[in-house]
Amino acid sequence: MIPSPPGFRHLVRLSDDTGLFEHARHAVVRREHGYCTDDVARGLVVVSREPSPSHRLIRLSESYLTFLTHAQDESGAFRNRLGFDRHWSDEPGLGDWWGRAMWGLGTAAARNATSWVRQEALAAFLTGARQRSPHVRAMAFAGLGAAEMLRANPDSAVAAELLTDAAEAIGTPAEDPSWTWPQPFLAYANAALAEVVIAAGELSGDRRLLGSGLRSLAWLCGAQTREGRYSVVPVGGWRPGEPRARHDQQPIEVAALADACATAALASGDPSWQEGIVRAAAWFQGDNDAGAPMWDPSTGGGYDGLTENGPNLNQGAESTIALISTMQRHRELP
Image (cartoon, rainbow, N blue to C red; front, top):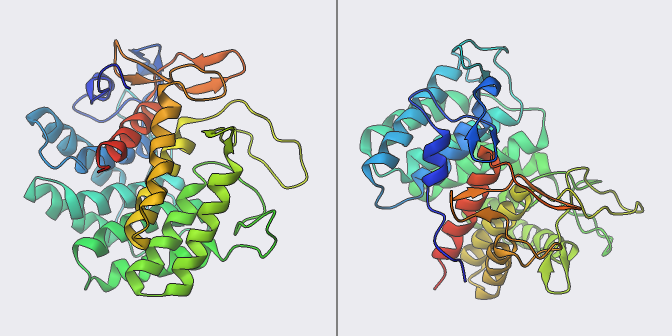
């Protein structure tokens, strides 16, 4: 069992009234690296999932939403990198950060406990939904935000169109049973692709599409399981026919599996998908290739990666949010 719930302690430590710092040395914020839209959007997802947030978490929602609306331009694109000096270092674009911003805004518009946050997030989501990214993962992340919107408002044509376009961008899995995946390689946050197809099939009533997504996710879970535990594709990715490295495994890959399995259980009505969530939580607890916990109980921070020498003890925003997200899914289990 988890020694004590990680909670939001370290996320609060990484945050200020501007946003969410990207990096930390152990648990100490590295201000010189500044903030990024990617991580602020991830933060907005997890705080918006909380049904009864504390005042502190409500303040985080407000801070993160303000950051995203500041990052967004009139066309719906987003800047990604803000320095500690409060100057942007890039121009608005449609990379992964656009997709994650749409995921954060869609989740906040659908689920945040504060009414004005929901309203402002909806306005920003509708502006961002004018755009389409040429990048598959950006579209997948945006599709997750659209799915959240549709569950809250099934009549949202804007969200339905974005989710449909995201599923089309991802494509259908190959027929080859040794590589039942819609892309020619595995990179990062892979399960998000299957999750979007599952959600698109569920929310549109398209059983064929739903089955396609479930088939992809089942293959992915199997490909990333070794001796009953998750052994996920490392940061360098994996292509068929190539040797597969075991390190450095990233927490976002595990969190994406937990999210996708939760969506699969909801969409299919099959509780066996919950085992994927249990396995993801266990990975953070130490049921992984190194047999080492992937978070620090003294700080509540998630470790940045699983290396051949054990955990990378730095506790940045991405890994900490992956920990929080996975434990949220685990807490939802019956």
